[in-house]
Length: 539
Image (cartoon, one colour):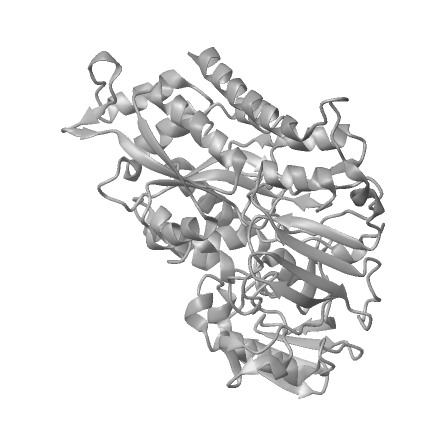
């Protein structure tokens, strides 16, 4: 049965490779790269499966890679820890409640307005005035006041110590800075009049669902970027994007901020083999997973035994080696080993179809006749699994998992939807199972774990487990802990609770993957999967 399942995956992959081959010339069998691509030296054009949308940095509809070019935060999260960005330095009071930031004096917004303490106060106040929208960020509930001490000095006071404060201030949104001239009625929660940040690129033109153009900020405090123009072009994922790359209509693709891929692995390999493109991958950034709704009482997903059975039924090594062609590694825990505090001893759950069947049998799910699905008290062992319709790899994985759990008497209906719809289901609890991913290297474990308690994120995922009150209490304790050893113990307990309950079923550890022209230098990564340092790139 296992070999049959792997064979099915290989057939799926072969079909994709044949589609990818549609862009080859009949004479040579090589990709028709065209001359336009090779002539582009001054513009980087990247494919995006969705529009940049509203670029208001204090809301959440905009494209994070685009926002990362335009807006900046006080501090930056790097491989070496938190470093200065718009703040040159900062002081933290002994009680851990007061942060004093000393700002750069040579920064202006794109519209010429000065960046100073008053602008910082106005922006943070605008974010805080929309507190309900930002409830997933615990810092939003900890900020007591923000005040301008001097022209370039800001004091931020918290209601209690909160160790991830600097990390959350470094995120792509919402604590980034927009020109106060763009505010509407003194704030940003009801929309803005423009998108002028302090970042290395300015938004120059935007045609909805077609493209957005960004031009270099010649007055950027960090020095003008080498590439004068970057365009985000909206294209359907898959063959359309591949053909656009081959024709030179776009020359850059990368995994987007929702984990969807514009082209599949076979297409990536084909482009690299053409000799015109390079493939660059970051270290493990996130864990791609299936999220199970423990709070949906009428769903089999609310049972621990069912969730564990799904975990055991999935062959992650095949997903890693065949579906992702080795570009992702099999994951057996919620966080990869390079995440802070994640070196925790957890119960092993290997790929074991027999174990999956035994768990279901013990939980009262009896096999049907003639290979029909299991049932209990007249209720079928049937669920819905939602995946991002913009991601070809998620679709293949969904079909693979559907086939895998069928072996143990479980029926999955797989449904592809737009990423915004998936996010809405997660927030409302209208799902049995859905694909998702952890926040990523720069934000974890604190951001993903904080989201366990958020109505807009994973509250429905965690609120049906027996230890939910203990879980939520420990999450609150770890966020205000000022002792490193206590923090390690609390994180270990939190990770064990959700691991034992199998509410987050890991699949692979994913990276940010970039396909870029061979002559593009400086392709690198930040400590986040949500944006790229375009300002460091040059042809």
